[in-house]
Length: 188
Image (cartoon, rainbow, N blue to C red; front, side):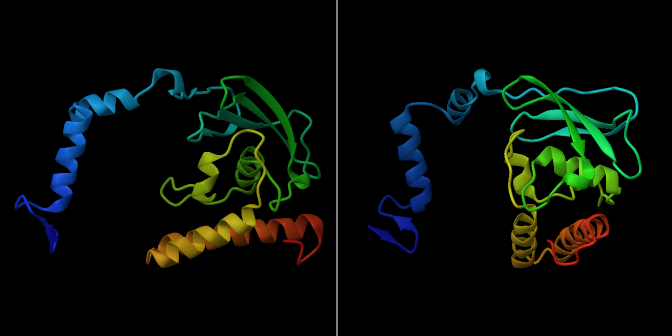
């Protein structure tokens, strides 16, 4: 019997559930944590030190890379080279033409390149991309504008006005840049 959170044994029900779970498993919390840690899925991030990098980093999938302008990059056709290790541990190199990026169907690497090229201001090291971008692999495509809308809504729901305003700023910067490049106001 459970009355107001107190179980029949005289202690809170959640505590009884935890004790039962621990006894059933026959392991301490530390042992359970050690079982969860699996070295075969540990993600290793590379630290890149190539010259002229404009961005370096990674995400929660193990994807790690750096961005730098290509030698043949021009003002009319800004081109960025992305080089690194994908989420499977394989090396990759991609050429990204900034003016061809569509934020409604882009990869996280393309969006980081666009962000770096635009010089989007960072809020205390805060990413300007929605948090869900941290779970994307190298070739995963998504609608970043929808992701921004969801992130802004989540931040408002959590009463995180500054974070919501920052994501709004980042989304607006993308819209303005795309408008200038394409000449179309309502494309995004």
